[in-house]
Length: 83
Image (cartoon, rainbow, N blue to C red; front, side):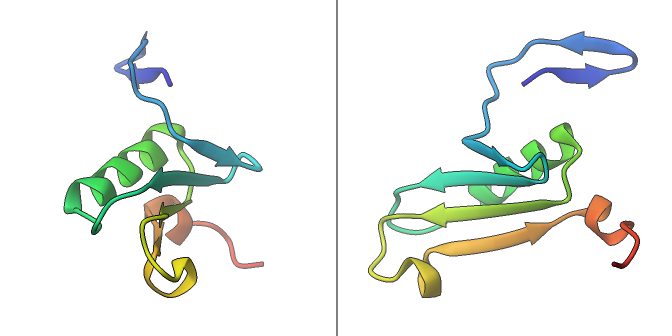
């Protein structure tokens, strides 16, 4: 994913796992527990891609729906007009 800074574009090794419908950033993990760095990673991808929503999914749990997901929104989401 390219990074834009002060009018310049830089190629990076950053790669989000999935970008759904050009709106939702999905980051997939299989870890014992979510760490704060995973939230920071997802927010960074959302901000760099200029996307309002993100979901962090952990497949190393018994019930993904109850304990294996976190949904995040950023300032872009908060400034969207209501539907």
